[in-house]
Length: 114
Length: 114
Image (cartoon, rainbow over all chains, first blue to last red; front, side, top):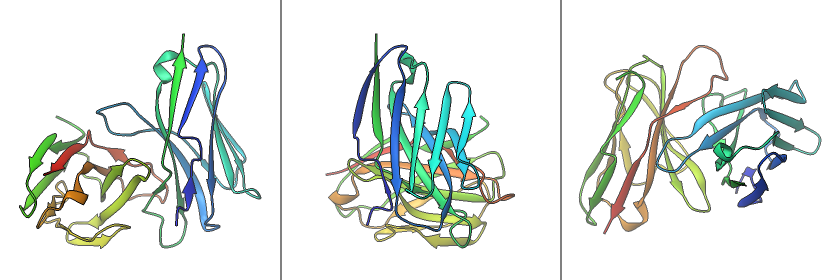
């Protein structure tokens, strides 16, 4: 039972354009969400997060949007750069009992082309 | 070096052999985690530890054993390796203070079981 889903395995975007990566979740106990970026042969690195009390969080070129009613979040990268080419994982955690554990999606491979 | 390290980075073993993957962090983080990354599954939690001598199962613990005698080390042992345990293994850690601190990942160990 995949509680965090990233339905697009891959995405290709031109440099300078917007990249939108999507994530859906099913567990209503999740109240904190994170995005990780992973380059080949490296470990994932934290990118940005959002609490369920917010619907938007912005950090430079990266913005995460949360729609709680739809159980959906998205990561926007504007403008996209070639260095953004990586696998992006969405992750979620809950407040009670599971606060220490993250549930990850399957990842979306982003390719930013010149 | 400061941070979180894993050893070995690459390992080839045979079915039935015991293998231990090492994880070491220099931050004195309370929590440590072991994940495996497989195509189509993303990152799945194997075991985690909230402090020295406290460990708990994650989503896919079967066939694995962990220990945590010191805060900085969290070895993962495959007691009798199987081909299905061929994967990339990531160790992660996070501070104990606060519920939603992001996890910091090591560079990974690529394990092949023949």
